[in-house]
Image (cartoon, rainbow, N blue to C red; front, top):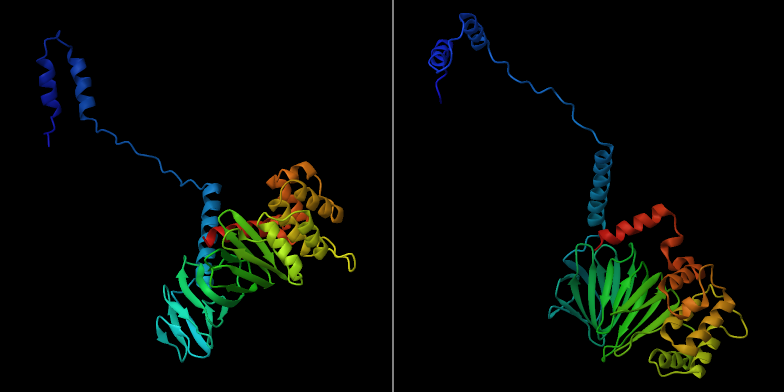
Length: 352
């Protein structure tokens, strides 16, 4: 620390400088200034800035955080699901199951030809596993309840928001949109689904089928999710639809399908689930077949404004979605109030 100089020392040093002699009055003035205490700079007190934007952000963060914690508490996916034997003697992780037990992540639940079991889907529903089935519990995330159905069948009943329950088969991923359904997988890996309540999304790569209550769909090992069809479809109509999905059908098969969807007697309006079948067919057929489906559906329910024949035949996605919303408001959230749409957007983010 450097020693401080007294005013006399400063004056003596200044007088030694090679400058002209200064008058005594100047030295008196210099000494008075040296003797004066130095005033310390004081930073004035500043009130904290309260930005409305920061306050709003804090509120939003609190709401989002609280909602997310609530989602985890209500719909968090446990690592173990309870299994109850119904008939016969199923096995869990190779051990026979004679009473209620737990199925852990990565373990297999296997039933033979005379056994079945009920599996608790966390806290959001149940899945009854049928005979000759192989099911594995796969944890997909904090809220994702995932099963792999390698073979056999399950009857799922889910009471929860959409996109919490997933069943993966060798040929597709079934995403629950709040529903009840039966899924079957044969020895080749092909699967079939029958939805009895709500909706299920079937996906294989970029190919997607939306299956509503009262409809069925099949997933072939080569073509992916098939076009949904009404449960009352005849065998002839199902075979014709399958050929169309495989790309091998023609106008005869299409007429068979359309006749089954809209018979001459007992007219069905386009707002029934049958319209879903036609909406899928428009996107899966080409050329004259696509035009024929469009003309039939447009005659039953004219497309809304800003939807043209040319745009639909060109498979312009905005027009397809707009017509889908017009055909049935349940197909899309866009007809819901802004607050509800925002809540669903947040839900989609929260569960991923």
